[in-house]
Image 1 (cartoon, rainbow, N blue to C red):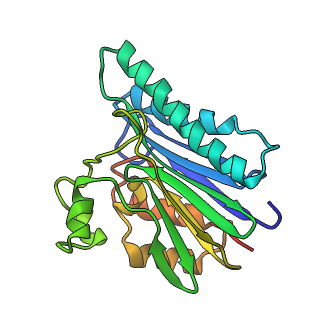
Image 2: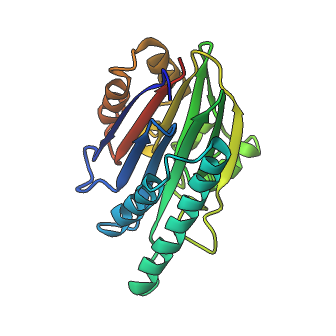
Length: 237
């Protein structure tokens, strides 16, 4: 991908003993993934690693349309693999919230399930492109609270869809055109639990690509770092 620049980091945080998140950057294919595993030690990291390993198998020879389908199929394939692993452990719940971004030919497409997010900073304004699959998301949609307020709700961690849980991962898709100067942020909820929209906007607006993920990570850690934190920032030239 000519001119595309990115930075990525994943961190265990200040409280957890193991990092159940996984991240993947395939800049030559224009693909980036954040997966936030759930299910406890060995299970959560199995789920997130299964997702990124499936996507890492994407062929470099695919055109944009086939690459988009391949990305979706890889996540669906990971869903089946995780279900099989859960069955081997007696039907326990193992899964991963996932957000995946693909850039090609002046366009973006994203797939997601759960509460990992994709934001876009454009012309100084920030927009959340994904919508959490969560209990509190319904409160936001109905106008009872904002996304920032929802972070403090007692059920803020309760997600309703995930890769590896249920009959299908329930992947949603969003697509659109990119513009020069666009900056995309993919993250697990370990970041947005400690950084509201204005905090994210300011950090993304003011920080060069070389240090932006370090700055965002520090915000999460300074806020308590209660969860694993995964962050990918991608700049459109």
